[in-house]
Amino acid sequence: MLKIPWGFIQLRPVWRELPLCPGTLKCHLSPIPTERETSLAADPSIPDPWDHTDRLPFARTMAFPNQSDYLDGLNNNYSDYLDYSYEDTGSARADPAHDPKDITRILSVIIYSVSCVLGILGNGLVIAIITLKMKKSVNAVWFLNLAVADFLFNIFLPINIAYTAMSYHWIFGTVMCKLNSFLLILNMYTSVLLLTTISFDRYVSVVFPVWSQNHRSTNLAYGVCVIIWTVGIVMSCPSLVFRDTMQIRNSVICFSNFSLSWNKSYKGLSLMRHRTVNITRFLAGYVLPITIITFCYVAIVFNLRRNRLAKSKKPFKIIVTIIVTFFLCWSPYHLLNLLETVPDTVPRSVFEIFIPLTTALAASNSCMNPVLYVFMGQDFKKFKVTLLSRLVNALSEETGHSSIVHRSFSKVSSMTEKETTVV
Image (cartoon, rainbow, N blue to C red; front, side, top):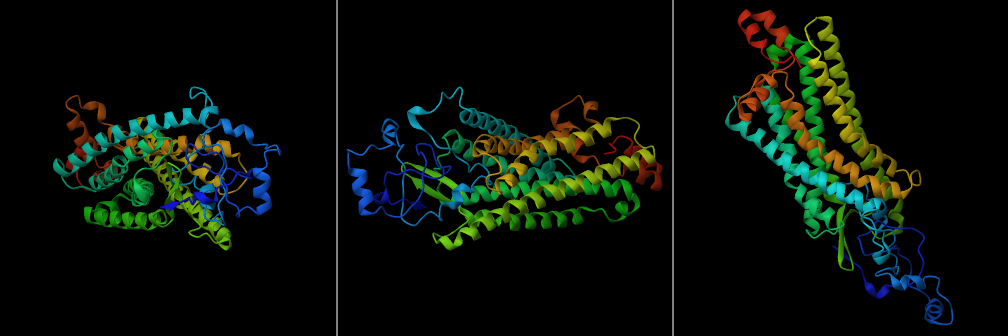
C-alpha cells in the first residue's frame, strides 16, 4: 500500500479534483516548491486567497514530488465496483439530509444490504435443494452454477457495505482489495454468460427439439460450465493486476491503478488500459450477451406462435420480464462506465452521484435471479404446500422443448410434459 510522504506537503491551488477519501479536499501532485515560492507563502503581508480554508478541517491541498502520473488512476477509478469515493469538505459540507452524495451513499447501503440478505438466503437455498433434493438434470446444472456465482458475490457484499457505510474508507488490506474486486467482476461475467447459455439452451430445445433430445446431457452442461468459469476468471484478472490501496492521512482508498508506475511516460498507457478494460467489459459483459438473449427469446416466441404451442400469454410475460430486468439492472452501470472513459463528456458530479447507485442496482441482480429464473415458473401457483416443494418443482422443470419433443417420441412423455412450462 502506498503511503504519502507528508514532508512534501505545501499550500497551493489545484487544477483538478481527485475522488479521494472523506477528509481530503482537492489533492494534486506537483514538483517541490522553489525557494521563492516558499518565501512568498511564508510572508504574512501577502494575502493568501486560500486563507478561508483554515476554517475547514483537512482543507489544505497537498503536493508531492513527481507522483502525478501514479495517481492518474484515481481519476479513472469509477469503473470498478464500489471504488469511487468523493471528497469531504469537513464542517462546510451540506446537510446529509440534502446532500445528493450522502443520499446516494445511504441508498446504496440499503440496496446492498437487502441484496445481501435475500441473495444469501435465496441462492443458498437453491444450492442446498439442487445438491441434496434433486436428481441431476441440465436445468439443475445451469441453476446450480448460477446460484454459486451469485452466492460468492453475496457473501462478499458485507465488505462492500462496510466500505460504503464508512464513506469509502478501506480497512481490509491490499490483498482483499484485489480479491474483492476480482470476485465481483467474476460474478458479473459468469452470471451473464450463464444467463446467455440458459437462453441459448431454451432456444435450441424449442427450435431443434430432436437434436436437443439426442445430445442434451448433464455431461455437456458441466463441460459448458467449466468453459464459462474459465472465461470468467481470465476476463476478471485485470482486477488482480490493477487494484491497489492508498493511504491519505487516516483514510485508505481501494482504487484502480492503471498506470502501475510513477513515470510520466506511462500516462498514455494508463488511459489506454483503462479504456480497454471498460470497453471490453461493455462488449463482452453486456452488448454480446444482451444481443444473444434477445435473439433467442424472439426466436422462441416466433416458433411457439408459428406452431401454436403457447395457449396463454404467461410465457411471453416471463420472457419480457427476464429481458427487461436484465436491461434495468445492468444498462446504467455499463453505459456510465463507457462514458467515463471519454474525458469531459459528462460532468464529474454526475459520476459522483450516479456511479455508486448504478453499481448497487447491478448488484441487486444477484438476488433477483432466484425470483426470475425459479419462482416465476408457469406452475409456481399450482403448488400451495411448502416453499421447498415449490423450489424443487421450479428447478426440475425442463423448459422449451416439452411440447415438441414428446409429441415426436411417446404419448406417455407427452402427458408428463403437459405439466411443465413451455419457456
